[in-house]
Image 1 (cartoon, helix red, strand yellow):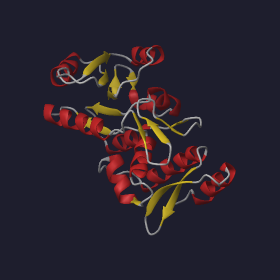
Image 2 (tube, one colour):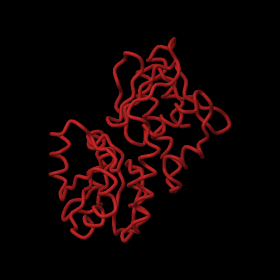
Image 3 (cartoon, helix red, strand yellow):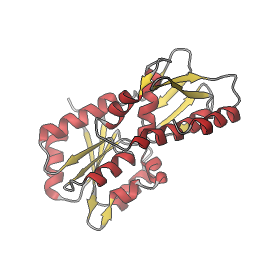
Length: 244
């Protein structure tokens, strides 16, 4: 039975589109785009977001890496995405992961590799909405947002949502840097500062909800509610602790 999960595929090569249709078409709801213009138009016009985006890095004269390097565009997508490309360059690979890609497939890839990568990402995504014990925290994976009780929701990137989901699932227990890097970046080596930068921005956003990411010695982090801590004080702590 075909899943109700939707995948948007940004690909302009006929042969590659055929492979995606053959491998994923019987499993998921697919929508194809041959240009960033059509992709952006759909993002602006369609209320529902896809569960996953698969994007070719280079489309004619367009470059998806340039597109995702702008934070406003990542927020606009509001969905996890995989990059596919015939380019096998370490710097480009790192740049894609640092800009939010959850995986990178180098062409030509095997059909089984594609299926496993897609299944893994859709499996580990947080449920559409989930609420944790007495936290009153609600994750909306389709919109990449998190809110607490009746507070306003905050917009996260795909990587920030994955980090938050891992910390939230630990229910106050410490999660090591090694585990965060392994789970969020799928074992791909990124710069040492990458996790720190994502944590820094995530902390500032969560401070608006009185939720704190606290460093736990020797090398971990835990998610804590902070109902009695004024937001401005939490932000001050974030600024002081941003180098960790």
